[in-house]
Length: 173
Picture 1 (cartoon, one colour):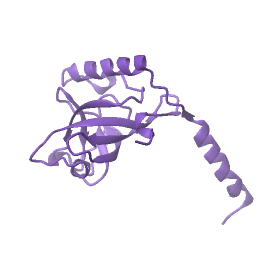
Picture 2: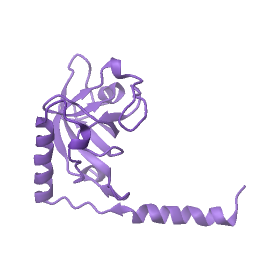
Picture 3: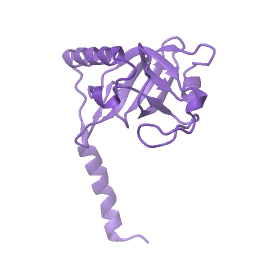
Picture 4: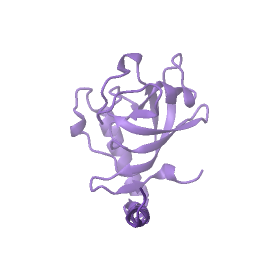
């Protein structure tokens, strides 16, 4: 059943969605501060709780080591409450807010994939992102290699007030 109200609703939702997006302003100072926060988060002991790590809301790119979820995590609950699906484009980050979409690029292969941050981790010093097995394969990371040097460029970062911020990955190459 279509009504006049539903026809009016769609443009309003579209407008509200546009209004809720914050412009991307990646100053050198902001990205340097965010980089320092990322390095600090990576240096924390594995036992440090996710709530004790400050969220990176900058939208700036990060370079570091990616790994992928082990088979034993398949079906286990992630931080956002969903189950880990090895075929989905999910990922874990210690600092990016849950719900962040990001472009992950393997620096060796040049292959990229888009992921959604749905979990916390990796809890290994020096690693910045854990990828689902499907996403890892998409960027040319296989189990034999185990790790890859990547760039993680946030596309859209959810902010605590409900708005979103466009990140460095939102720009055309």
